[in-house]
Amino acid sequence: LDVLARRYRHIVIDVGPGLAGGDAAAALRRGGGALAHHVLIIGGGGIPGLRRQLDAFEYLREGLRVERRRIALVVNRHDRATDHPQAAIERAFGQPLAALVPADHRAAGRALAAQRSLILERRSRAAGAL
Image (cartoon, rainbow, N blue to C red; front, top):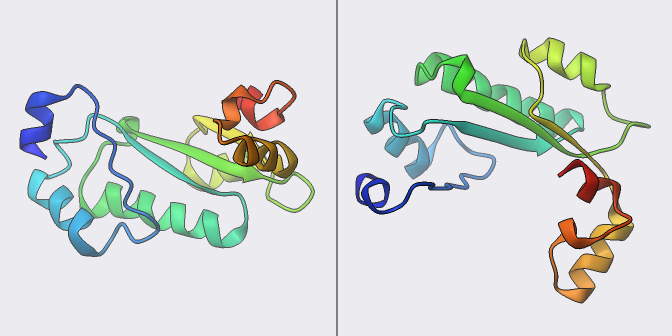
């Protein structure tokens, strides 16, 4: 990470759902969280996704001592019919969400079929949120 940090302004590390274990956690521990200016936690709006986000959030805060102001939360594929409302999610984390991206399966399917970014789908609610 030190080598990348000297060469690039932004580094994105996708650690998947298992932040607290494996190589990503070891690298973050070695850097004491100091390597990351900002940490973006992204997950789904359902109970399993929110639980993983909360676990990652708590691990960053308590295990790695990352300051709260350096952690941003994004809920992806949020379904307002079945997922918790934004206010409840923000209460659980004790801070506002950086973004709430609504579920838009049709637009995602069109973008995937056309092999282009979802953000280019003009009629997409998800693209509008991004």
